[in-house]
Length: 368
Image (tube, rainbow, N blue to C red; front, side, top):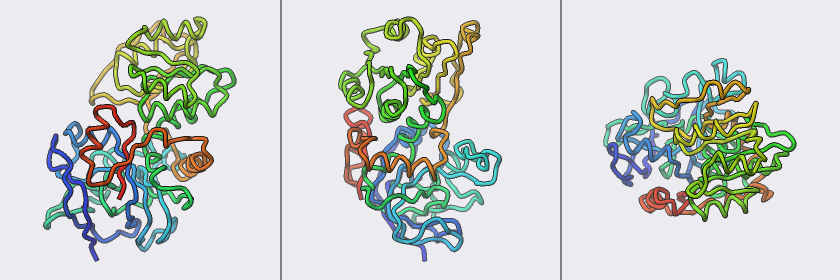
């Protein structure tokens, strides 16, 4: 039987989130019904809600959910009712990248997660008053008390770990951590620079602190965030409003430059400065996403020293192994995500958006 639940609906681009009753479709064979306990708020949600991406509105967003499985489709084998789960992105499971352990680069990633608003077969997962809504966002649309979730978005996790503390693992945290662990892979004595000390950037700082990197530089314009970065593992901080990025990195590294840089700001000017600050054979990972079609100019001769610029989606993570490992680190206190999280009742989603936009809260997490 279809399930009636309460969801935060965005009616049109730029409109606020409005709580209203919606109806979930019956679970397809590879779907599950999840009762949400917590859901992280991400800048991607705000970007889509603003109308910046062609996701079908009105619709239900949310892609950092965590909850308890209530029912499963006939073909679901990985989870059962009662299991605690973190919800992440979905993928087809059949293309070359999915088979190769890189589902974030699935051949159908964009329509399945970010733009389509429907299942792969074109059917809708959510309706209201008989009219289809945009849903299936990252295979979950978790800004709702219950969500119809694609099986490949589900990651079973340790039930002893509070779900509120690990909801952000589904997107922002695994992106920052994966940038360091899966792409940069620091060796002994490496210098890692993180541009932007938001949720993704601070996750990268924490990840770098768990590697053999000996110099970890956090860059931001907000003093409080730089102070927090220092507490989470940064060995140096740079106030970008007070110092030129290239000069600061050169001074800290004795003129060598950075071995690895994580760019989270989405600013092409910052990206260019980061590339220029790389050491020979250094790598910059692009995480921050500006508007579609944005271009950046690079000094071609400056790249000939073996520099690399790599784009990244969701940490290039294989979620079924990566997220449980992160949960264990949270449980052990080695990945202190609680330092980033501010909790809000689901009814206060508007305040959560405001506090995230103003920078008051690094990672808002809605609770149900």
